[in-house]
Amino acid sequence: MKRWMGTRFTGASITAALVLTACVTINVYFPAAEAKEAAKEFVENVIDHADKVEIKTEGENGGGMAWRLPRIDPLALIGIAPAYAQGAPDITIKTPAIQAIQSRMESRFNSTLRRGFDSGALGFTSDGLVTVRDASKLELKDRVAMNAAVADDNRDRKAVYREVAVANGHPEWEAQIRGVFAKQWIESARSGWWYQSGGAWKQK
Image (tube, rainbow, N blue to C red):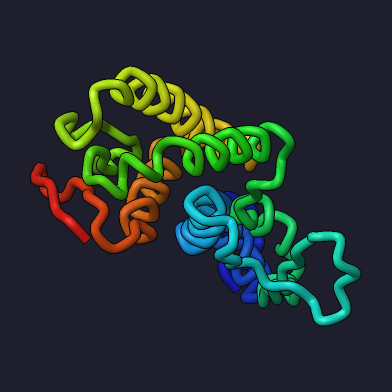
């Protein structure tokens, strides 16, 4: 048995120290898969809320509530699940603030922005925003309203990226949340819509 600075270490105590160290090192990380799932749900609801990406239980009573299947964490078996769970939350988009933004974006998309994407006037930027890429695709009488809708939508987009990060207890994740959403807007774009990639415009 070895001594170091007057302290006796056994195999068991060394193992326990290693487990605690592992717990600390995994305590905080960005849950990319969960963020992508949340972004897909949000984006699809905005673009077309008939597309459902939520998993619902068979016995659901029609109240519109979606349930996620619980995740089994093997670290729970050795007593360090609370620390892991704190650092790896399921990304929630169900707060009142986020839902209010989503509702505004759905309404705006259906009333105004969809026409801009269908005509080719609008495009998704690589940083998660919307822009007027070709104003000539819009009638003169529609341009002021479309520009205003784009500006309002971009304010909501920035707000939702910030709010998702804050609501999940990690404001420092805002840039990563935005990056995940930016990819999802493009992935969910319908055929014929435009998006930025590598500094150039491409059409789906």
